Each structure stands twice: as C-alpha cells, then as structure tokens.
Image 1 (cartoon, rainbow, N blue to C red):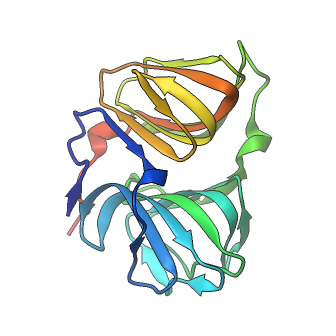
Image 2: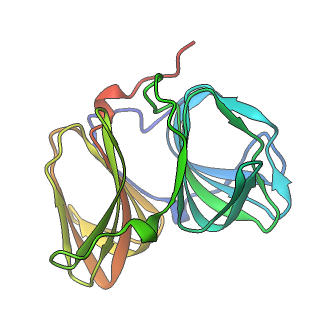
Length: 222
C-alpha cells in the first residue's frame, strides 16, 4: 500500500475528516496519514484504542515514535498520559493497550536502524521561555532529524528553513500555513527545500514538528 508516498509533494490531511479504519486488533482503529507497505510499513498514523483494548506483544524492528493525544496509553513499561512523547528504538518490544482508552499519533519504521535510545518525555515540561510568542521544547535531535513541540500565542509566527523537509501535527488550537487553515489533529508535510511559515489562530496553537527526515524515507527492510 502507498499513501502520500511522494515525498517531493506538499501534503495536508485534516485527519478529523477522514474515516477510522479497523486494525487487525479488535477495538483498535486508525487514520492513515502516510504509508509505504502493508501491515509492516513505514507509516504515520493516528491510532485510537477503545477502553479495555490492547495489541498483541510485538517487537518494533524498525522503531516506533508516538505522542499520546488523549487518554492514557499503557504497556509493561508504565502509563503514558496525554502529552507524553515516546521513542521506542529498533529491537524494542512491548504489549500496548489502554484500560481507559486513548488516541496516539504514531510513526513506524522511521528510525536510524542503529539507534538504541529509548525514552519518554512530558512535552509541556520541556518548553523553553517564549520568544516572540513561541515557546519550544527540543524533544529529540540526531544527525537525521530534529523533533520539537511548540506553544504559540495567538497570532504568533512559527518559521523554519530547515533542510530535509518539515512535518507538523496540530495538537491544539489552529495555524494557517500556505493558505491552509489547520485545526486540531491536522497534519502537514512539506518537501525538502520548502520553508515553513505558520501563524497561530485566535486561540493560539500547540504544534509537534519534525524536520530533516524526509531524505531517509523508504519502505521497510525486507
């Protein structure tokens, strides 16, 4: 399966406007944002766990990165409430689920295969003091990518000329970028060479962003 797999194109997905699709596990549904591959795929997805649902134990051969958007995600490593950012590197394993239910934004098979750094962060606790109405947390950085989380005051501007592409998820509020208004759960991907300018709406915005990673995008190893 290929979905939004042309990484030279600008892509906007208003995810709250697309249907939930069932996963192989009962009670776990998903909204696909981009994908290369079948059930084993380089994928960016919003996943919803119904209360009491779970996924079978599995190893993340290509790594897993996720944000808890609402509720509480759970596995044998602990409880991960709303606002938690998690990186589970290649070769890590777990048995995920959620007794109260939750929604996560998750990226699979997008790690450096030699990465073995596993961690969790509460994103809001990492925020710096605001500059021109924008407070930013550096969540992760390596030679391939930079991952941040920002709070924008109403009307504040978030800009970036980073090489390697941009990818944003609006976690709260709204932004306007390139003529598009992106509300909560909207997803934007800009190709390498296209700079970002995003202006927060009247209630401000909360934005997760990754830069630098698109030149490495490819299907999972066989």
